[in-house]
Length: 447
Image 1 (cartoon, rainbow, N blue to C red):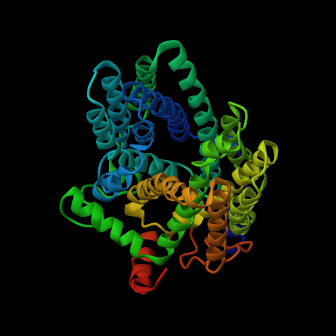
Image 2 (image 1 turned 45 degrees about the vertical axis):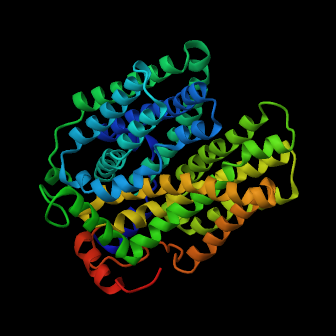
């Protein structure tokens, strides 16, 4: 690819019509959107079911988050399967297993501890089929189409979460929590059937992976741990993962305090739901504006300012604002989540070709785990300094993350790809070789 052609390729702004014209992405996108709706429905109805059985707010909260924290362990122990096994079987099996679990809990009355254990055990497999799905998206879309595909996924995820939460409330009111869980099971099983019937049977080698063993010989656990170590030892990959993990974790810590903030300030019943809805609305608008209106270099230049936009508005909660001003602050915070679009292309370019599935699984599971830990940490802080000041502290921590990223994330210059010249002059140069070379040179380099 000539320098002029490469520059035009880098600055090309894809369209939603272009990416939705890709059949494989369209299938993965639609099933993922339905599954996110099912997730929100399952999580809320399971939490209500546990609370109805125990009357314990603690166990209800545990039911709400029990599927998050185990995902990191699943990625570390099983993540290599995303690159070692055919993707259709993994994705179909993941949806089918989650749906079957929801149906089992809905139909069989079991002790709460057992049901929590079942959900936690099944969540260990989530990074595997999510990683396989994300790898297929990366192989199906190139350049800015991939970034815009992630943007569209984010927009749909925000909408699906809101719809799933609303559906959960309606299902519990109309059908009860067990039948609500059964509805979520039907949605999961529908996704599994769609993938099984419409996704071609691809072997790992057919979509950029390596058949059999990937990035290390031996069993699944050994290969998964080996692959995770290789990924995290690379300075570039490690930094880009932390940049996508830390700000959302801090904001999740603040989000987890909204109900307590609303209660402590004696807001009218139901206003906490309005405040909680401001973040996903802001996220949806931010992804739509940044993904659709800005060219790739502009998105990458805005990474640090958008992270600052996530954190700085929350500092205003130190003044204990009312519902109107609080809603505006949370909307602004949500807009900043679009910063992730500016990191998608550099992250994909930094990954080894034969470890993309595991990398995507590790990225998602690490983010989910930290977003589960964040509320617990800042909830503890709120016990001592109050919810408003704890939310402000979480926002300040996110803003400090922007300062750290500023020290190593240079603005994208027109005509550059991944901020570095491509020695091969090709959009898809030997990523695997570059990654291994990077590991050798960065092995002892601190974060």
